[in-house]
Image 1 (cartoon, rainbow, N blue to C red):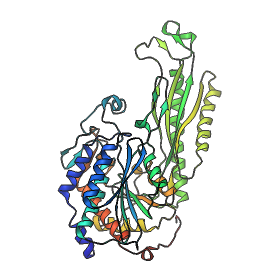
Image 2: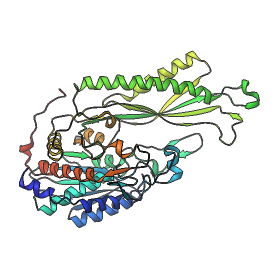
Image 3: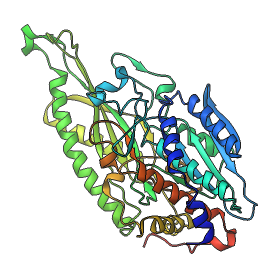
Image 4: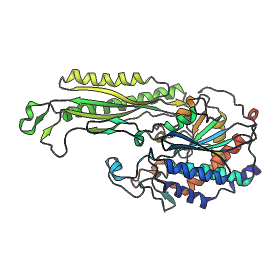
Length: 449
């Protein structure tokens, strides 16, 4: 490890990093309400001496970009992180999916057993904190960079979209996510040579992420009452056949597409995609009057897709599944509408300097080269898809592990040692990429082999 690297790593402040993450968690920032986060980051960046730019994506929604300028001779690197949280922290919105509202799902940070807990602690305010810790250490070490180092806090990454349902419309900024902040960023003057997005993946490297398309499947029946049940066709009962068929198809689709992608990228350890299919919501009938059987039932399905796959092919395949049901049972009156789509992407050059920098940094921090990306990190969409599609060479490297960070059912949390480890990896990557001149980083362009 070089003198500069040691000097920077010595200045990564664990105590201040924990305080920073807790401050970020305490800022309530569901999708559409990121303004408080933007203001906090802008003030923080100014105090660090960064150049600050606020981009108004829509009314009261601002991307916040802080830049540590280099001398101009080196490549630029962006650390990109979304400011909106997966959930709202409000029971009215979150209980239908959570079942129980633990404190770890609320926007109030606390420390427990070596973890910072609270909404946003791992998705993804932990990485925003780690980016700042890394940049602050570089500044305090007085190491001079040759390329610009950019930290971008973006709005609206969370996977959600406005939609009209049977009983209500879901409209407004709370439902406008799906990468709208980074898409605005990348098309309004903020681009870099390389980018890192710190979505949680236990400091593995991911160079590809799936896309997704969402379908509203509608099953129609004939209204009737309990007292005349034989006269009607219950849309909810017919939808149970649809659920079984979609679930069976989804398992086959996932395994087939996963296998095809691994063949395409020749088993590359950082290009792992598991395109899952999830039945996410269902609606129909009147809970306060189950004496009526419903004439309409809607099912909402999320289908993950491979980079480059035409989404119309997914729609055609799903419609064929529904067509078989209709032919088997004429009373199954069902159709599907795609109401949201967001394509996947992959890094065009798996030997990119940003990949090499990540490998070196992770090896120095963890003592070993990162291994194959685990399947549990291979199904989510994130903003690297947008960046790679516009020509920024972007990868995902994030601290924390999902088995620890969510699935205990008690909310989000980030292990403090993971936070510090992530900050060290980001600092070393910045030194490697922004600390050299461009000609020093020219990578041999290799395909997936």
